[in-house]
Length: 194
Image (cartoon, rainbow, N blue to C red; front, side, top):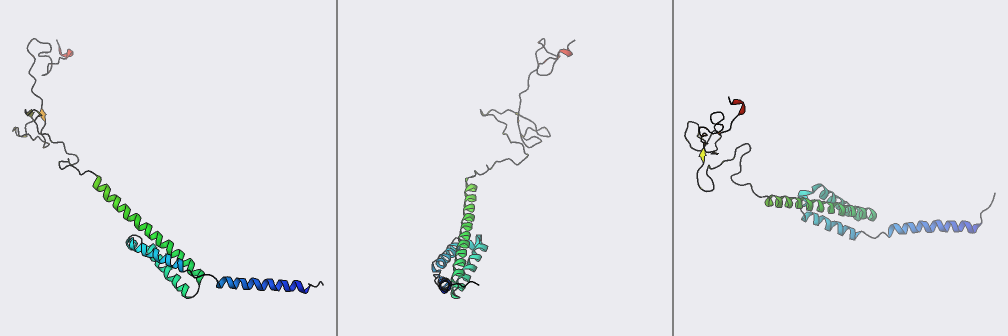
């Protein structure tokens, strides 16, 4: 069996002891997360001012809960846990703020779009209805109108609208081409000639 020299054993014991002391010192030397708690508290207040209670209630409540848990961990002197919870509370509060601001911006954009859209004219036609014409030309002369049912030229036909009717075409004079062999407009049809 080989013996380990006493000096080597002492060095190992000293190294283990210093490592244990260093770890204990590190655990106790974690500074209190006051800055993180303050930032989280401020972020929650900003979210509340941004109306997150209305537009992002879940994220706001999560931030509030985590901030309360961070305060509790701080009272229990669990500084690392308090720091982590404070950071999470700040992030949740910032999410609530951004979500709320986005909703407000979308509502404003919708309102601007509605106000920028021109209003429909008062005499807009209902779908499927025919346009209404007055039956007069730009010069003030009245064109013929279709008689209303019953024979009175009231200007409103079966569809409730009046259109200018074409003037009557006089028949073609006797002896002119197409006279008597065509239609009322003077057109002739070759197959009808004898």
